[in-house]
Amino acid sequence: MLSNFSRKTSVAILLGLTVFVAWHFTPKTITRAAVDVGSGSIKLTVAEVDPHSNKIHRILYSEEHPVPFKRDVQVGGKSILSEKIQKVAFETLSNLQKELAIYRPTEWKGIATAASRQAKNAQDMFKKINEDLGIDISIISQNEEGRLGFATAAAVSRIPQEKIIAVDSGSGSFQITTLIDDHLEVIEGQLGYIPSLEMLMDIRGQKLDLQTPPATVTLKEAELLVERMRVKMPPVPRAFLQKSKDAANTIVGIGNENFIFAMGATGVGKNTFNKEELWQAISHYAGKPANELNQFAKPDTAVLGMVLLYSILDSMGLDQITSYHANGSCEGLLVDRKYWSPSSSSVS
Image 1 (cartoon, helix red, strand yellow):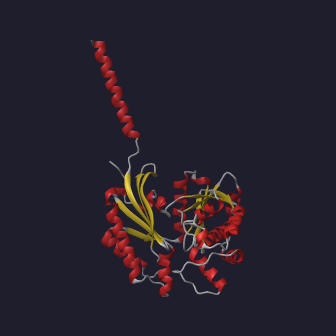
Image 2: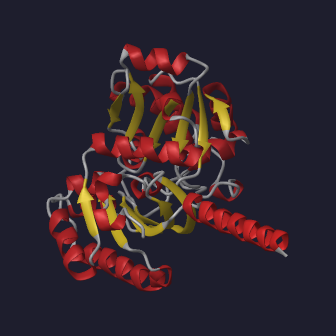
Image 3: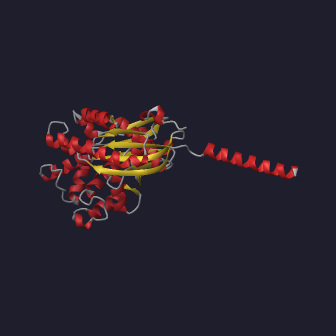
């Protein structure tokens, strides 16, 4: 009888210890909503995050919503956001907040990049969004944009940070970021899709029209664009070049199917490719009408996007790149302690 009691007690203790250990070591997650206001869209990701390990546990929602901020600024010609585009931005975020309430995010945080840096009244728009919706959106520098792009590259690739060279390119600019002697260094480039489109229209002797899709870039135009883009590229520090040539490191391009890295991967037919393979894809697709480019998410801009990517790789001394899916810089923002309040970074 005593032996039977001891056996039951031991089993109970063992079960209790198992439950305690499982509870103690199971990630305790919180739900956050991250917003990336770019030059041409609002990207939003809601995810369960383990604030202790600083890792994303599960993505609950991740979408890009087109809002042409940079086009609006350029069409207006006064470096301000129109009342119309401000209303679109506010209503987009308001509707998304209502739609995603089912996930019960503990906090909403956001960043705004190139177009918002350009627009003189962007800060007023974000102040109203914060006051009325409780979504705190910060206009960040290009250097900070590079830092968050690097964090995003690490989050989605799961490659150790010391072995990553992150490339992030949007509508208005691009950044290349990596660790040099344990310090994060950012190369800031002023070329994005819209400046590239401006170059193309200049070559064609046409006025920039951001509402009408351009005809596909021809091979001759691609060659001229590469020459013009090379002049606009920033210098590359020797330490960057040395690191990029080390096969132990990985050059990571981040973005969704609308970004130049995905365009390159689609054109070449694989996620990891070199610049020679990319130029072969450009040569193959150049001049073809959009209805023959349906494999691309954006057929009208696919070849121009690949030309921009080729120019970045060629001018920056990057021989090979791997495309990873990311929703702007949302994944990096989600795990960056700098942006979240202490109450949003702890779990009971």
